[in-house]
Image (cartoon, rainbow, N blue to C red; front, side):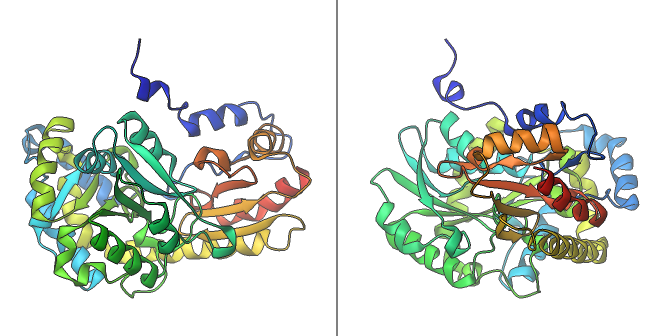
Length: 384
């Protein structure tokens, strides 16, 4: 008998969806794959050179500190301070083997078997998968299309259970693309502070937010270290998802306990990308800004392409994602996504991958294709 928590989780969603597109015969043109949130451009050439150089070094072959290399922690802390207009130090930061693992380790630190964590629904499927495998319950916080899929703190307060240990916010959101207003995030921070809960802020896509204002003011108050955990991914901004580098920022009490989990689950994050990324944070700032503008243009192009379509409704869009409502006459999302992939050459993810009540939506990750491919999306939808 294998672990019940693992058996309770479905197959990895993206490989499953790609079995549908594997049946596509090319009749409508090249496959447009909008299943995975990856940047549609390569890493910077200088970053690739630094990665190659670091990989051949003795330093990268040795164990590193449990919480990550000091140089990368210092530079990420400075980057966080500049982005949020707040005080961050290297001691606030731990580097992890990807942001997914950062979430797993944060959840392990916060909630044991039998406890629960609140996730906005629709949720990022790997978050729910991780909680289920760990024996941690999920309290669903329904987010409505008419509210732009922004969660409501008053609803969250009503849905809390005695077992709830944390509330997770993902902004910009995966899967919907919704960007949570600073006032909403502040209200959730106050709720967590008042109820003695942890606020887990997954800001994987914060480098693609519009404008330069701080995304929220949670970190402006030093007391955030007593109740908040920030999660971040280098994969998107630096185009290195295969190197698996993420981070968490938290206060000393949390980190002291999390260090036990870090040591057990990863010993230390892989050294090669840490060495290269410590250089890249400052050196590639202009390149990152250019890519943020590129992604904004792709978002605008996607909105312009699909908004005129009859029957289809764009319920949310932001960062890498569009959340598209199916026509009333269409079958449910699972069947629609399979047909679009296998017969129309448009690979998407159906809403049910992201939790209950999502049978009328598809997630389209437009960031990994150029504007020419985006312009072809309406014809594939019309063909459906």
